[in-house]
Structure formats: structure tokens, C-alpha cells
Image (cartoon, rainbow, N blue to C red; front, side):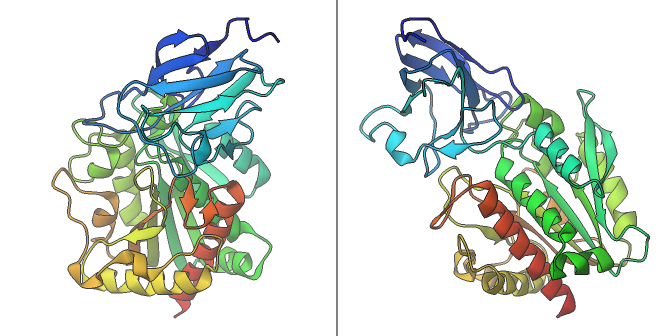
Length: 372
């Protein structure tokens, strides 16, 4: 296709977010939509149609930040993604943006701040593992069913219970890739998988902010507060449903509850956020030490990234987060947020295999913690 023919910039797929200011030749001027987030956040995703063979220069006209590996790109309608690398970003002395040459056969090229995980990805996961049960937790404000996954030993005789959640902040897609990876490890035909299937009942909410995920919202710092600061006031139907379900489901069992997140856009280490009383903090430290030993890579997980354990856990002024609420429930052995970077864990570039390796290591560390 000739580079003289017009192309278009659109945000018309699940998870997309962009506002086009103007197009001048091959220079595209855009900014991310905050959509109720205050004061700022950095999620964006869009596609360009019919720009085959062009070198596109994408300029962000408002404040923006990029992950360490540049920009995530897909040329097969979102089926697979790769990173441009930091060399695609404009030099530091210029305004923020990136340049990419569109392959000749790419009528549809997608750009995003990270590798997306949408409802379609979950549907692929469910099709791959028919033994994975999918119920409805509730319906979102916009009427979407909010998935509630059940896996492992479901006959009521499990020795342990594991609760997983992600997307309290809609933009943090890598957290959901790791959530899926933990469940994959629990369903695998491996010693770890067999142990989970015999001993652990798993409950998971992959999209806590379901509307935000599908509509491409930032989710983080949503006014008056986001989903992960709603565990006292209960503005959102998902949080109301979670708070109603979990205390009864956990009961007095030996339960572990992990919430998967992503840190700031340029983060390069994965870590567990401290929370709760001394008992939970001590158990967090044990788990971190086990996971450091269990996860040999790619992308090392290190206790040294966690600072001083004596300083206690995070306390937020604008609401109660999920793990702080969970830490107060009887039957909780361990709870905490695991932060997984958008683009790079130390020397490992984020990819689906990297997230699966990390999730497998988390599953092994959970088993060891329960049995220790």
C-alpha cells in the first residue's frame, strides 16, 4: 500500500484508550484519557489502520511515561505482542513519544503501554482448561458479568484455600497474566499441580474493576477513590460482592490471599507490599524468602527489594485496601499484594513465558509455606 494513502488512529477495541489531537503527515499527536483519575496516570492503547510501510512518529501532548522496554506492539490484531525496546523512544531532550516503522503487511498495528489482558484472554484460558469453573461474582455498574473462577479441589474437603485477585486498578494487566500463571501451575500435570488439585481450593477474581478493564480506563486513583480503596465504604458492586463472599468461604481454614498489581511505569523489580499486623508481616517475610529461593529466574525475586521489615505495612489515608481488610479475617495465614512490573523484572523482559515462570514459582512457594 502506498504511504501516500490516508491512515487512521482509533481506540475501538477492548482496553483501548487514546485521544487524537491531530495528525500531520506521519506525525501523530495524542494523549491518554484520564476518565476520572486524579491527578494523573499513564495507561494508553490504540491501533493504527492502513499505515503499511510508514515510519510513524507518535507524540504525546500531555504528561506521559514509558516502561523500560519502550512500547508493546502487535501486528496480528492483539493475538501476540512484542516490545520495541527503548531505542524506539524519542531522545530525552525531545518531547515524549516514540517512532515505529509499520511492516508492509500490517494493515492493523496496535500500540500499548504493556501487554494487555482482556476478557478475550480469559476466554482463551477457560477454553484451554475446561476443568476451570467460571461463575459470576456479580454484575458491574455497566452490566457486565464479573467472573469468579474456581479451581483445584472443589468437593469441600480441601485442606487449604487460595484467593487471588487482580485489576483493582484496571490498567495493571501484567498482574492478571501472573494470576493466570498461578492457576495454570495449580492445574498442571506436575508434582506441584497434583498437590494443589488434591489439597487446595482456589477462588479468583481476575477483573475486579471489570468495566475499567474492558473500557480502557486508568482505574488507578479514580475519584472519589478506586476499587482498591473501597473496602470500608463499598461504592462498587464488585467490592460489595467480594466482602460478602470471602469471610464465609475462608471460614477458619488456612487461607492465603494474594492481590496482583503493577507498580509505577518504569519499575524493574517485583515485590510484596507489606501489610497488616506483626503476624502477617512475619509470614510475608517467610514467603518472600521462600520465593527468592524458589524463583531462580528469569527475573530474580529478592528479599533485598523489600526494605526494612520492622517499619511495618502500608497505611493509606484515602481508604482501606483489599489486603488490609483481608488481614483482619480469621483463617488468613498470609495476605499481600505482589507487584509485577509492566515491562521488565530485572534482566527479564516481560513476556507470557516470563509471567508463567513467575506464577509457577509463586505456586511452589505457596505450597512450601503451607507445609512449613
